[in-house]
Image (cartoon, rainbow, N blue to C red; front, side, top):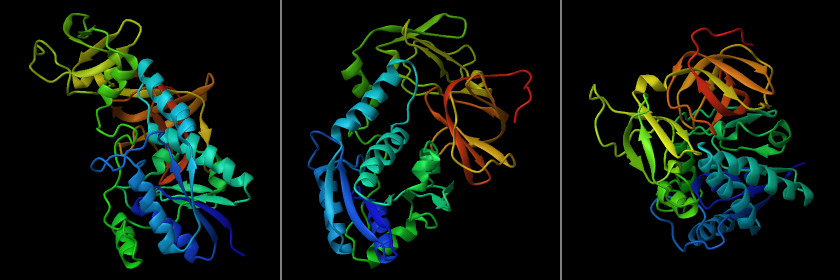
Length: 361
């Protein structure tokens, strides 16, 4: 007997093929498009965003081709509160959030899943590129499109009611299948960057909401080397757009080392000063098997992976890296893997360079 499945359809090729596969497998599928913007644009701007009127129409056309019922759910108020306002608040506090991760956690697999279960659905299906088998989340075979990192914050209960039909497929295979199925989104560009900042100008978006306030850019010794119009416009590891008045003594590029929102100060220095070996995180979410072999951690979406050890301590998680990482920013997620399998995640609070690393699990 098939499941009652709610298929989240963004208007893109991945979610359309995911819905088609679930329906073809004999499940009772209903498509739903999430209206996340209170004032959606008529058309997408290039390949940015996924919340326009055009996207909702593409999702409806795909549902018609598949032959499933289709609805639009207004999630704009919840998205504004849990994703956009969180994004702005995190930058104001000197941290670097990941809004796609927060959307998965708070919208797709909290607000939407809760409503779906209340309406009698058994699961929510999405077009994410990640494997999910028996509640265990693993990387996609398409490493360039793998989204297990942004799903690593989900709980075991949320994963138990999730279906990722594209888990074993590459993006090229998904597009080819969409064309065979007659889905008009087969060649539609992927959405990328931050969907609610259509023009890609994150600094301008934050300045509109947090205002401008001139502050100093200082080097490692505290000497002022430039100025800025708001510390919220920077992130740890940033190199471009610093507008430093004078070059470093060795002539090498400078990078953002830290952000102090209270004093509105941005500290810069050489790339070597970014290197850290210990990551301090908040409380972990354990959502995979209890494995301690072949451990790695990913610190940014599509970022490098690092061999590691970890230990729970002081209400959080300490992760010791086998080699130094750079550009580690508070507010990002540290997602732990055993091989390709996600075992848990935690939000990064700080990072440091440890001369001696203690025992870890």
